[in-house]
Length: 190
Image 1: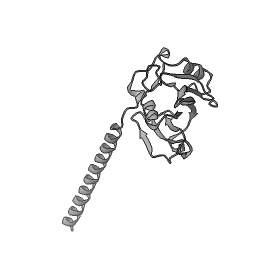
Image 2 (image 1 turned 90 degrees about the horizontal axis):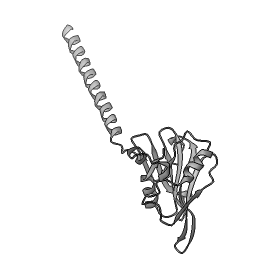
Image 3 (image 1 turned 120 degrees about the vertical axis):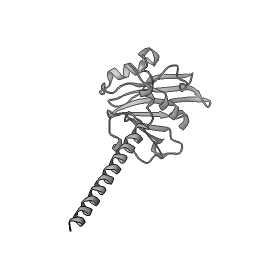
Image 4 (image 1 turned 90 degrees about the vertical axis):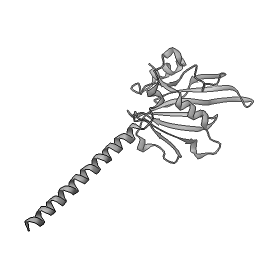
């Protein structure tokens, strides 16, 4: 009986040791997977000076109800900016927005060809999940993008949520590639 109890005790201790080892491996793999997420473009590059972006970003941000949300902007010298684009304030209830108009796009003017807007705050779970493109970043930021209204001719739209919940709309009527390049070139402005 003592021998059987000793064997049961040894078996129980072995199971506990294996379970603990599996748990440690699981936690290590989870932490390692989290560290494999890419840095966000706004996290991995230096902040822009206000002189490096359209002054409309600062003007709109100052009027915003969400001054606790940082300005995410496209630099004036960014390759994503079309040379003939003119930035302007765009209406965005409570938030701040900068749209870029093109005087000549495929032979005619294109208003709000692309732009960036802050729309307050939200959480990832409240975002539209029907789009195929989703990306998580190491800083806790999240991006999803697709066609506005699932309209095949609609403009490309991205929702971006920073780790603090600040919510941005980024759009482009030019192409999906243009929108993705815009996202990759967004920077904080100090």
